[in-house]
Image (cartoon, rainbow, N blue to C red; front, side, top):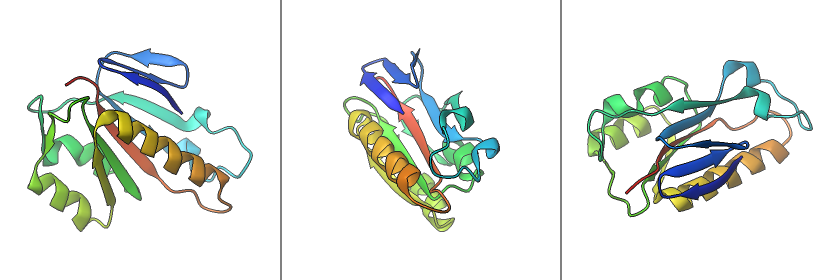
Length: 135
């Protein structure tokens, strides 16, 4: 769970990061059934982009390759990071739902989808969050 976001800092499962992050579940987490603890399968990776405030196809490739149901992109505190049309089209062409919002709202959306998935019976939704944590 993403517990807190403030400009330049994001706290996930009790650990604080001062860099942009990709939040996802690794393969070990697939098949988790209701009631099992989920944090064991969470991965938090550094998220680097070719240009600081441009999110292009190469910047989302690692997330797309995980074949998630949803990718949520946080564009920073003020939304200064922009997602290119090419990146949007690449994500959508794979049948992946795309949500783009300011990072504060994007982290809340991530938590809501993650929590709803945890409460559902059967297969869980795969959601990946890409969060730019500064401007």
